[in-house]
Image (cartoon, rainbow, N blue to C red; front, side, top):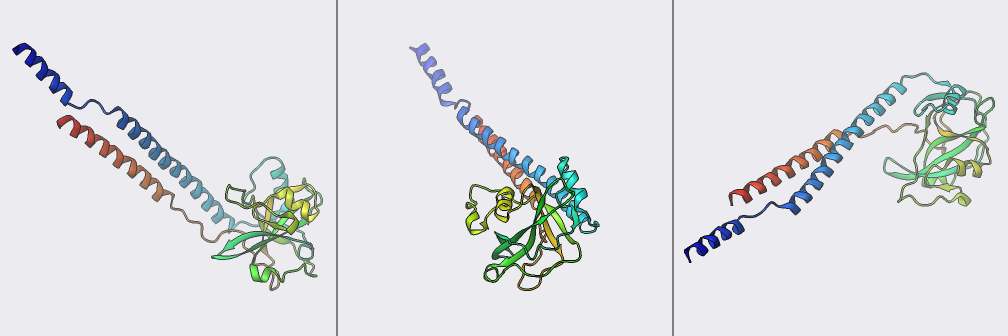
Length: 251
């Protein structure tokens, strides 16, 4: 009788002590790995943003090079994004254009895109972003009659891409929501377009023409803050998990 009671007491003590929390550990490990990976991703984004800001800062002081030189590099696969160039496009204010929906300084409007024919280039044309115009002013915008005698100066940009929330383009209405270069070129009637846009800096068109806006004036860089947040959450999660294990052990 006494032996059986001892065995029961021993079994009860073992049963009363909680086992290793496998499920909790699995979920904690997955959450920890996710938080750390998000922090690492933000560190990578921080380095990318710092390089981008340095490139833009250098651009502000860089002289404009001939467009043909940049286009030859682009044809060879060299990244020419944010390169300042100059080109002869005397008719860009006279040629037809399309609108690309945009928001600038919390104001809805459009970017006005036309085409510049190229000769002696690897490409037959390049799309020129003449700048931003508010929606109300865009209704009154028509091709002008001015011929530009001096070269235009601008910045080469790849442009944005379609995301899952971007509306479909409306080529029949000359309205675009993302920069589909082949589709825009077809609407404008040009062939062999360059795989980049020339974002006009100067000369600025006459009112009510679009306002040149080649490079964002304020590019936020909060990736370090975001990285610290994700790593901090990972550390907090690890602390909670270890504290839970300690309570289970001494409980």
